[in-house]
Length: 519
Image (cartoon, rainbow, N blue to C red; front, side, top):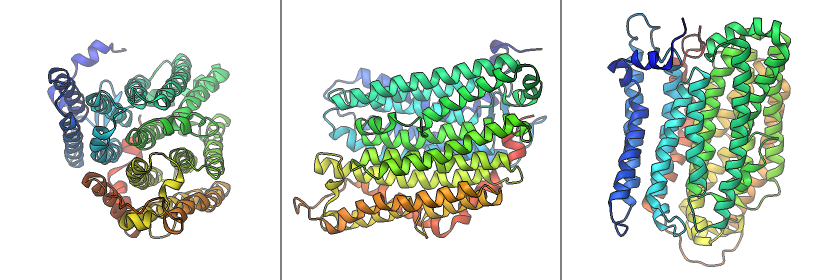
């Protein structure tokens, strides 16, 4: 018998609600910040709202960690050990969701930390408290996407994340560039959401369910009766996700949006938004494409993801060669890195014996988050000093802020995939996975595009060490920015030198059969 949404909500116990405390904490803190922002006079500095939002994120991170420790000892009676199923198995609290929530919450905290002082100093941000009011629901939407096991909860998380970020991109009301970026992001985001919803409607129509596990079980019969409609539904869904991920050839919006948005918002789009969509996509793909692994439909789906990954790597890397605007360059670099992170999805499903695909994705996501947040935090300071986002703003950085220059070198070397950095180790894991699955052309594409990317990463280093600066004035980093940069640098080196710490943790925590596959 099908249960209505009212039945599902009435079936929630207080213990079940307790497992939703990470998301509830973020929403409650967003409401509190909104009320305080409305009640307090305009003359009062709004910096404390930023610290409240950071406390909310850290509190949510604490709840996720606590739940993960609880699940390590087993679940409630009648449940799969280590898995809590809520709302008719449309929302799952398990090792997979917990790992990716920890990654996204940690990244959000690192983004907010330097962003507090940046927002206060930015005269173009008129309503400073609204930045944090919008950021917390966006993070909550990302957490929902990590735990979703149903198309409906997926769309709820997707829209909560998307709508919040539409406004965040245009938070600089006095900047024409920011308003243009917000309009473009809203249009492209609306189109991609429409594609996703259209694809979902077809998938539901031919399978009779929105649950991933039920879709996987019904897909064989649906292909026999409605093959063309199944293809339409899945490829519209994939296309919508590709737009959200800025994967080529659906990436054209990213450079303009990244350039117009504040640096902290751009870092959030590059890391948290992208990470949430990849986490949701991996669970969906394992449950729907895996049952059709040796059929023409399954092979077509996997081929589509492999082509998407390859095109993202090639187009993102080659398009970045001509860029001299740092934000636009990082947008295209993000497209290439999206291609790297799509490889474990297609390869992991295509060679099911590779149980480590989720760990490979998680490891590279951590490495990418550290590199991206560190570089954007550095750029936040440099662009403010230079008054623009161009590469020549880094000229002579070594002589004006030597420690910052060396930190930037380490982060850029990690982006380029130089040994002893997290970026190198993450790429190595993915390449070895593609070789193990005999997808040699994907591994070769990764190696080739990584070598090509040296040109624009080393161009920034060349500016810092060999170009003369327009002024010899020393650059002083705000304490929060300096702390964030060196956390990212230290973690990048630690992960590169001791990758087993993160990989072993994820391998122990994530089980494909228990956490990702629904049945």
